[in-house]
Every structure is written in C-alpha cells, then in structure tokens.
Length: 217
Length: 89
Image 1 (cartoon, each protein chain N blue to C red):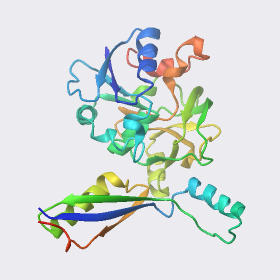
Image 2 (image 1 turned 30 degrees about the vertical axis):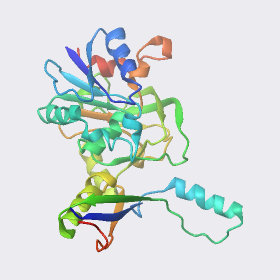
Image 3 (image 1 turned 60 degrees about the vertical axis):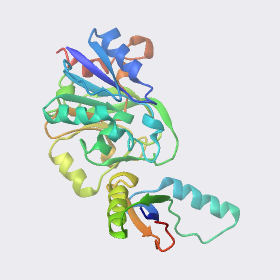
Image 4 (image 1 turned 180 degrees about the horizontal axis):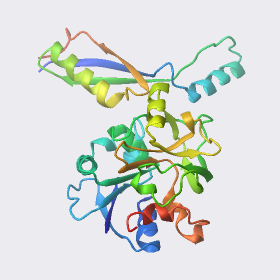
C-alpha cells in the first residue's frame, strides 16, 4: 500500500497527512510535487489542505491546472482512490471531479474548531470503516467552506447517497449541512473537515483513523 | 499582431449568498448612507490580449472567462471587448 500526497506551493497540511498515514498507521506515503506526473505504484492520492498557489482568484482555481492533477484526474477516472481534504475538496470541485462549489462562510469568519459530523458511508470506499448514522468528531479549519449547489443538484446528490458527511451543527451555512461528498463511483471523497488531525491521540481524538485505515482494511 | 483590451466582470449568481456584500451593506448604514437595499461584490478583471482579429480575441476571452476567471457553478460573467481601432499592428 502506497499513498501519494500532493504538494502545491501553499499546501500546509501535507505533512499532517503524512504523519497521520505513515506515523500513526504505518501506511507508506510519497509526496507528489505539483509538477510531478508519475503516479506509478500508488494506490491512493490525497490532495491536502492549505492555500494552493495562494488560492488567488478562487480557492483551487489555479491548482486545477497543475500537471500532477491532470494525472490525478486520469487516476480517478480509472477508479483510483482520491481524497481531497479542505483545500483539496475545493480543488476537486474546481476540477469537476465533484459537483458544486465551496464559497465564503456565511458569517465570514475563519472557523477552527472540533465539529460533529454524521456519517452515511453509502458506497464511499473511504468510509467503509464507519457505520451508517454514526457521529464522529473531526476538526474544521476554513474560511471558505460553505457548500453551494442549486436545489436540483442537491436533491440529486442526496437521492444518490453521495452526501456522505453532514455537520450536526452547521458552522458555515452549507446547503443541506453538506460537509463531505463522494462521486457516483465512491472512489473520490472530498470533505472540509480534517480527518488527518483526528488520528494522533496527542491532538485530542482518533475518529479520523478509520478513514485512512480503509486503505489497509 | 493587434492588441485587444477587455474587461471581464465576474459576479456571484443571484441565488448565491454574498456574506461579504451583506457585511459591506451593513457598514454603509453605519457610515450614514441609508437606503442601500442591495450590495453585491464581484470582480473586474482587465485583460490585454494579442490576437489576429477581433473574432479570435473574443473567442479566446470567452474561453478564459468561462473556464478560469469565473466558476459557472456560482458566478456569472460579462465581457466588454474594447474597440481595437487604436491598437498598433
């Protein structure tokens, strides 16, 4: 099992993901610089949190054109497992691998706090270690995490079971309390909360471990 | 090659909440400017582009606006392509 972790100029959770995967769970990781095109030997890829390319224009808008992401898109297309956390979720929506968009928090504040989430794993391969309706606690840390989709799209996502994570107490005004989404195949997951920050007991909880542990299940 | 100037205006779609616009509207009232019933914040992007003719310039700018400058999921855009009569060859 080998996990790729994308590194953009401005990524700041890449090493957190490495610690959670390799340090806490023994999953071998390899950093993928944004100009890298070689994903050989990887069974999954994480697009971590941060401020890719400064998040100029819109969050994730510039990152979408990074060479590594052309390869990640093809990798996902082939059924490869892709996880986008926080800025990574924003990047996945800009790439079109997940529908909708992430916008400025309703109350404008950057919010950094532990958050309760209700899990509905459905077909999402990353969440098979969680039971339906289970409540977990992951930290959030974002200023632009308000999920936006028109009512028709939201209904379609709900009907197809793609809304796999919802806030118990909506912190940012996301429609449908959406905290995380999967694609129709279940191999791509994007979420605003940080499971990698809930893997080491030193940081206050280990609810995120089962998400990454699904790679070695 | 002629140089074309354009301005692309990017605005949030009407259905999308604009909390920054709402906060600014509240500040307008504190300034003493009453009666501001709507205030929404967008972006103006000024672009200069070399292209063989106006038609090509427009096509390139439309691609740029739709695929990079605006995210059609949440934003609308309008393109103002300025007259190229002053552009040098």
